[in-house]
Image (tube, rainbow, N blue to C red; front, side, top):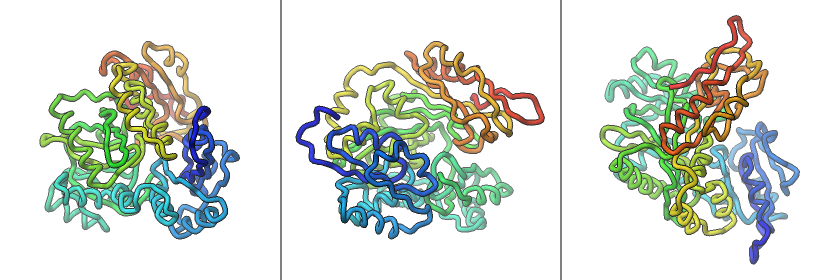
Length: 427
């Protein structure tokens, strides 16, 4: 950014596509970026020619190959920093960082975050979790688990996001399908394997936090609205509507979890179930939340989580400024997002009513998530959602209602044997 003084030149290696993070990095004076991505995602890199180097490897290339390529560039054009701003390739980022002595999350921390069973075992040892969980190498392992712990249970990939491969299993007849879904291949599954754990009954939320030198600051607790069958998130509300005791319990639990996993810097997104016994960790991530949760947080606090992460990567101390921002009155009291899902499977030919939805009171954004010609399906994962609307208001209920109303007014025309169908997905 113009006006920066005294900053040493920086060359940041970004793992993954980085979305707009590389551009934000380059906006600082003296900062160059290089990108390292899986081959199949190179087309998603924004302004690739503005990077000093663009490196691509197959998704199944071993870590040592990624390290070797990074080392080859590092020898003649040294990297000074390294970062991964999304879910994908965080493990490679940690491995390369360790090999090149660049500061980033440790290999062990990323393993614990990406391996949901290892995370639970670590939290159990720290006295922070007692959820029954086990590795399921075959269907019989799930049957053995339910014989001991009963139904319902959750079967899901050992490491993944976007609710891909997640199933609630109510009886023995559902085990085979759930195991197959969790063990499938997807870009959203970052670690192979299947985990089975007891179902956590209660509403869910996520905790958006930022850490610096091992000190943690919670920005927001976000309420989650999920489909009860697929667990795909249909909406979010910031801040969550919680009683004081529950909020205090969450505020105490999450920093302890981050400490146990040795998450010492950067953004984190921790998912929580609020059970009858109190808040319980579902999983955590060393990144900002998806589903425009950072935008919801910015709406109510004025804090830009990605900008904080970018500035921290190049060495800035950001926690003091973040706390000053959080101490000031927020721009609005509540912000919500809602998603629409096609009511039938087929080919999307058009989305009608987008502009009218944008004109509704309180609506700040309406976005088409897919283009005409896209094959759409009933709700199966977060990729099934085809439109979203964000709204702000002076109370949470109004923000959710306004976002829902915006989605409800949009029509999805789908090419199939039946007539065009309305969007579904409203709770």
